[in-house]
Image (cartoon, rainbow, N blue to C red):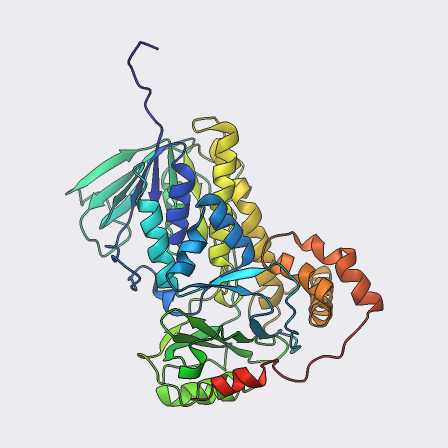
Length: 478
């Protein structure tokens, strides 16, 4: 190399400034100059934005995601907490009924702590942290039109600057168009991703997809927290739907920053909640346990009810493609979206970004076959969350054309037994949470921590109702 010549850094383009896109940009910044292409104009603070309509509903980050966030962006969760978020002890700070209608005891002996806050706050802190990196450039109000390259390698992405109303445009709209050349293009554009179409346009393969749709609809309303509950860490309250019942109904109360409670109600086909203000509390009171309705009746609502029906589990199996093009990677909901009730989307996004960073750390950009290795590395956390979600949702009537086979039904029964055991035994609960939080693989459920209490006890009786303390019930009365 001639003296004084600085080698060019590789270039990467990330499509979408979603949480997945921002985390991917952070993972890539050590190895490339990163350009993030975003259709919307991003808000300056913790405010809603058009591209994340699901942000109004309850969100949390499981402990497996908390660890991945802080590994990728050290101190990020501490910053969220400083702005009003909370690291909640699961199950000590949570009152939860499992799908099989078993109430968990509030053990505090496990290490699992989930990050609890509004999605707007998390996204705001994440944007501020990632976009402050000088190696990352944001192009707002810019639409990704198509990939450049061929079936063997993606070399860039065609973009158009200026606010757009459609995520895809044809060749007849050249005004403001240009091509961003890149050594790696990452599609983090969410459930509406056009990656399958883009790939076939380049002569690439078709993508196998699967959908499991329990038919869940969500309705969410924000409430002002009871005055007496504002100075304590009031627990999360979660009543999960039972797939053995049709329709299945459930809900969650999520205390968040600003002395507010997010209340999200859910119901499957034939039992969906609506945006009728007069029916919201009645729906909560008529769950299998009325605790959520009892907590929120009489509280002051803040704004209208927001509903969502796009809750199907949908997965695209990019990692199975035999001849995957170099220079292209798909992450986040563009690969797999999950029923939000399981709360795994943000955790998977963080773990996938971490997998990308670790894989690049071993190889660097530009190696033949790297994109395929990255896609397969990202598939591991995707598969873990997918199996947990589908294992439950496939049991709902009409959820899938392919009913669970004998092995899947046997595994579902074992998981129910594991939940029953974890509800009464702290060692078993720790094993169960290791899996639910995506910290450990499902084989953890077959460890002695689970099997010994499951088989020989000791067995404490199941709780007969939600384990709220008398003090918590009193503070929740408006």
